[in-house]
Image (tube, rainbow over all chains, first blue to last red):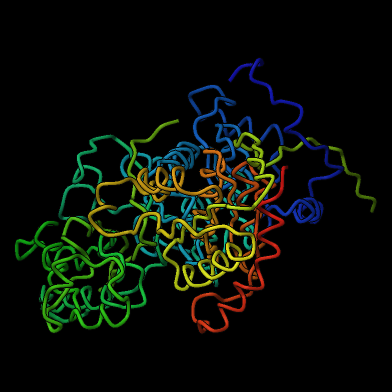
Amino acid sequence: MTATDAAPDQALIELDDESPERLYELFEAHGWGDGLPLVAPTTGRVDAMLEHSAGHPDEVLATLAPRFGRLTRRVVAVNAVLAGCPPEVFPVVLTAALALSQPEANLRGVNATTHPVSFMTIVHGDIARTAGFNAGVGAFGPGNRANATVGRAIRLMMLHVAGARPGFGDAATQGQPSKYTYCAAENADESPWPSYPASIGINAASAVTVHCGENPHNVHDMEAEGDPVTILGKYASAMTSLGMNNACMPFAEFFVAFGPEHAQSLAKVGLDRDGIASFLHEHAALPLRDFHRHFKGYGRTTWQELSDEDELSGMTTDGGKIRIMVIGGPGKHGSIIPSWGMTRSVTLPLTA
Amino acid sequence: MTVTTTPTLIYRPDGEPGSEPLSITPGPTSLAGIRIGVMENAKPNSDVVMGRAAEIMAARVGGTVTVLTGKRLPNSAEFDNAKGDEMGISEGVLQLLKEKADVVITGVADCGSCSAYTAYDTIELERNGIPTILTTTTRFEQIARTLVSDFGLPSARTLVLPHPIGGTDHERLFEWGEQAVDEMIIQFGRQV
């Protein structure tokens, strides 16, 4: 950044002091903030954040719906400071925001819906280590600054730049806790498979994935032998619910986050991502009559409409909709993360 | 102990909004002989309540309901071949409305994402020169008005019905449709 990159005057507010109380007062008056204490985005702190960027701070990189607020490195940095981010995570926040601005993420629907959908952000590769993200014990929280503040910075950008304020640009009937923060790192070191980005053809030293979905649904299997059928049967069971949007939109994705022990038990018998996805696609299924009864044909295909009522129909149209990675530490737990539905996950190489 | 404070400069967190401001298409100077299109968004009972309102309005002003259509049903094959943001009016439906309707009523925006899509559809039709009413409900009026404003058209023609539309019996929906006609006539007649 250079002296010519100084902030435009209209972007600045003079504050008589930067105490938490004064900041609360200011933000509440404008309808800003997530309800938690904030760090004042002073020019000095924002400049320090921008030291980790690699372009002009006021270049318009994208817009975020529904407000179509203009996304610049500077506004990303402001929200990262507010969230309490350490400066070295700035590229992760920026990359996640750019991923969410892609058409397939569909922010216009995701932000406005009555569904509680939030933005699961997964950090991959070198940046996870160098910026101090947690891929191990308790990766989804709490306790790690990088994970906690990056997820929060993304939410703050949605509130401020995208205009996703509850009752205005966000109609979520109940919301969900992950709307405050929702970020973890992939545990590639303990994964028996290639990294998630590599598995989808992205070979970058660092990358970020975003998925618009529900909170993680826990899956517990502690059978002593690590039988792959008892493990995967429980994941398939957790994926099979008529209350999820995936039920009426089987073209939507599921993310499956195996704990390392489950992943290693599966790999030990020769299962790879494709084999696991095929199993889950086959077993996460219900009789057609259940779908017909509950959804009046909504989102179902012609062949399903023509089939017998006791035929099984999958929660997914095919195994390719099931996205697999390893997250977390020791123990016999993992999770599945259903989708909002009319959205696609996005993985981008890290950018600054 | 006295605590002293120093004024400091902080950044706004919201940045510039991106939408260009738009105006509504002026309504017809007379509604006599008007051709009314109804475009429903697949939300339950949207066709029932808007269809009834359009029929009663047509009877009152000497017009016709010429089109009753959906816009694009989300079947899996269609979505698989599309990007997530492409959930608006299909080209075929847009052409149908342009050819056969002078005005359109669309909705019902009685949830979050459908409010966003209905707001977007309303603006798309207005951009194509068709005066269009966005139909919402009392419980989603605030979000619908915020969204049309966010998308650049704060003056969008808006009709607010009781809530909910889904799950309400048809007899009641017919009443609501009939009661909406006065407001529809006012909204379609607006010039600005």
